[in-house]
Image (tube, rainbow, N blue to C red; front, side, top):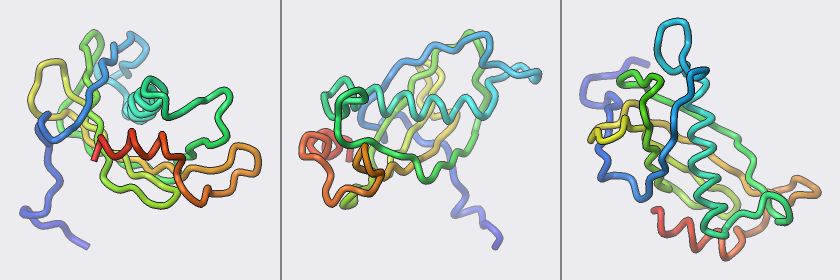
Length: 149
C-alpha cells in the first residue's frame, strides 16, 4: 500500500494535547549518531502516561487490583531530540473501550509548537492476579481518562 501526500502523517501542534509532562534527557539517551535513540521515545511514552495516572490517583502500581498491559505501540519521528534538551510529553486519549485505552503522545523540544515525534500505545487493563481483561475500567481511571479525550 502506498501513501499519498494528503494522508502523510505529520507533526502536530502542542494545542492538540491535553496535559504535559516534563522529561529531562540524560547523557545515556543519545546514541552514536548524536541524537536520542528511538527506543528511548517508547519509554518516555510509558513514563508520561503512567506518571500522570499515578499522580491523578487513577493507578496504584503497588496495591491496585487492575494493571495496564501494553499490546500495541507506534511512533513517527519528525525531528531529532538530543541531550541536554528538555522534552515535554503531551498526552491525550484517542479512544476508551470497555477494558482498553489508546493513548497518543507528542514529544516536544521545550518551547516548540510542533512535536518532534508522535506516537501511540494501547493499554488493555487486566486483573492483576489472573491477567484477564477487566469487564469495565475502574471508575476513578475512567474519570481521569475522560479528561484527556
